[in-house]
Amino acid sequence: MRRLTEGTVRSTGSTGESSSHTCPNKKRTSLMAEKKSVMFLCNHNSCRSQMAEGFAKALGLDWLEVSSSGIVGGTAIKPGAVTVMQEVGVDITSQTSDAVADYDAAKYDAVVSCCGCGSKLDGDKEVWKQRTIFQDWNLDDPPAIDPGDLSAYRRVRDETKAKVDELVATMKA
Image (cartoon, rainbow, N blue to C red; front, side, top):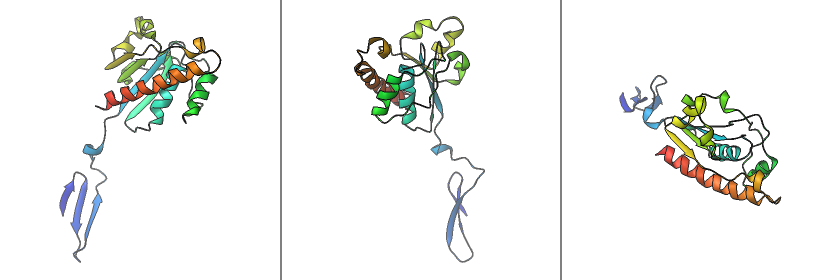
């Protein structure tokens, strides 16, 4: 019997045939990635942070846990955000608008203020800016500026996608 990799054993039976199996009590740490987590914040958690959460989840990375919340949560996700995300194949209809007060900052490696609301993270919310990674993207607010044709939503959606990709690359490194 000889060890091939941690947790895998190769043995030769009495007939000379070779077999291998994984020992269930041995961890294969070299193949396991360290889990990381990101929180996307916005004022109301109704548009920009929802798009960021959707893009990050759509990547399907097993090493990344993704959440979003708002300084003021509990508002509905904007229909324009849902529509433009569906246009690129990302469904955010099952996501919810939550308040940052419902989460523990210590559980997150990265925090992104999608709307420039970092300045509102003071007092008991200051801990959110003290995570390993804190970014303030200052994305425009589509509901406030869209002329009615979803063009502002699409532009911000595309900017958000690029920023999510950059963030994930940074976190993976």
